[in-house]
Image 1 (cartoon, one colour):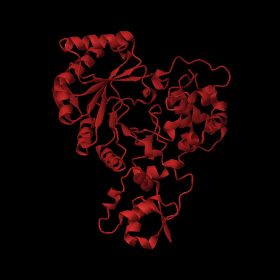
Image 2: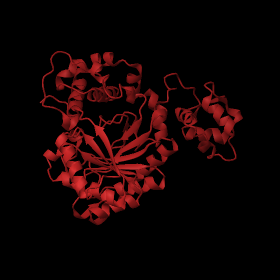
Image 3: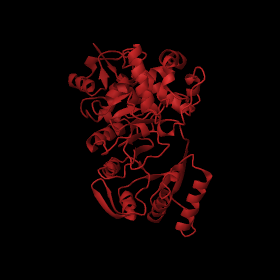
Image 4: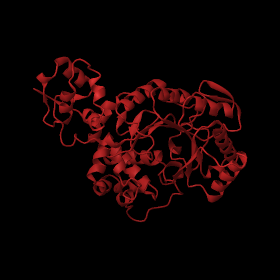
Length: 420
């Protein structure tokens, strides 16, 4: 009888992390035998390993009795550099460009639990997925009942570089509550982040200030506090107008006493027509060439079979595209370990579709007959995200005219792509 490696064991071998598997069996597992198991497609004779080690490797998802097929042999998580955890889709604002706008819950905010986040952080670190680190975002996470400060503490304890996003509503405020923590003022919040070892605080800079004029001065205030306290921060600049960008820099320069900022970074982003960023609906002329448009996306589709980031939504769903909020095509951390998700990743319908590059055929079969439910899509990333969402949903749907019609109506609504 033979035993074979799983995708997780091969992944660990590729990332030079097999020593930590040996550490699980300090007296029973030879490093050379483990490496042979990891790299040999033909497997390893069971009797070469102690029986209890074989059973334990299988139970941990590191070995299996059946040889992997060619389809299962891929290692899509090998390229992952970081993990983005979306704690909530709730927000105290309703920005017109927000890609999560159709998914934003009404009423009380819902949050991922600290327990589930701790588990996934430990697993992701063990798998070597934090090359660049962890990003914690929402929605807005600096709100009452939010576990954001506990998550930052967890990541610091685990040695994971962490970035956190906020819309900076709490700038210039007093008596601020974040989770169960109360702060006298905005400076106390920044000091608490610095104390907890936050690598970088990400602030939004975009045209939301047309909706919320008071926010710009609050962002400037938080940025100036970061400079005073020595907290690194960055501006996520999502297609801001030249006036907004210049106003921010001018006001920050004044706030710093005419000194140049030392801790500021800048990340340019583009507005993608998903969610709240959808333009006024227009009727498509003829067939929408969704497959060709998808190939103009920033990742050219590679992000679905060679992702650099994993995104975990508030419900625990794991996906590889930030522009498909609410999706969870790789699995769910609430009922699966990351090891299970990794072992099944190469069989995922989204992965297989983009790896095989059969977008035209898929679009023809599963999109074009129902494209009348969608307004015109203009951005390559929106097209890619829509195709991925459809691939996920089609794999879970009995393909009948009625079921497909209902599915497309739901997807169009959830992604903010419906015809008005």
